[in-house]
Image (cartoon, rainbow, N blue to C red; front, side, top):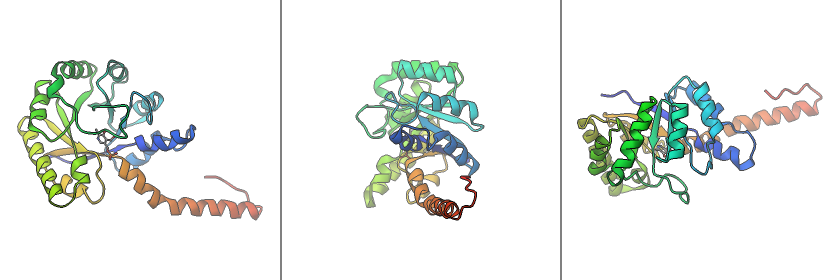
Length: 249
Ligand code: PXP
């Protein structure tokens, strides 16, 4: 049985930061907090349009993190150049369409073998472990082996959004793909859309070795943390009115 690691995706912290254009909340600080809470790695997606993570975030994550950084990106010349300069522990190649809200669907590895073989080789040369974000599809798994990727990440989005028998079918597809990946000698990760409800069955698949989770956790952290920060703000306001020294930290 593979030990199961948790990678935290900090893109959504950057999305909130970018809404105001300043530096708060800092996704790198969120990464440190996640690591302090026991996360085994950090994931960040540098998109072509830089809508959340930016180049300087990647540089700081590479510099500061003591745990593996998994850089998600499209297999473009620009992104491959950035990854080769920064040499993150891992690179997860994802499909990317400018108009999508989040990564929709997996990479068509079978349909672009030559391009992805070159990308895997270029990234492996500078020491990054490459994973391919794919649907739980035997054809894509075989193609991942053929292009020389050591790792695949299975897209759990359809499983997470399905309900009832449809969700059972999606789960069976993921479980079969994880077993097949193992037989093919691929390290197998999973992610997208996972939350407290959906993580249990996925985490129980013994051939998975890593889950990458972001959106739900950043959203849930608002509810876990909001009472504490409101209380802190009230204390600061009351102290100010009482003429007491006010310290922000
Ligand atoms: N893994 C990959 C390859 C992704 O693209 C994403 C979303 O950026 C995730 C995991 C995390 O998904 P979510 O934010 O829905 O938990």
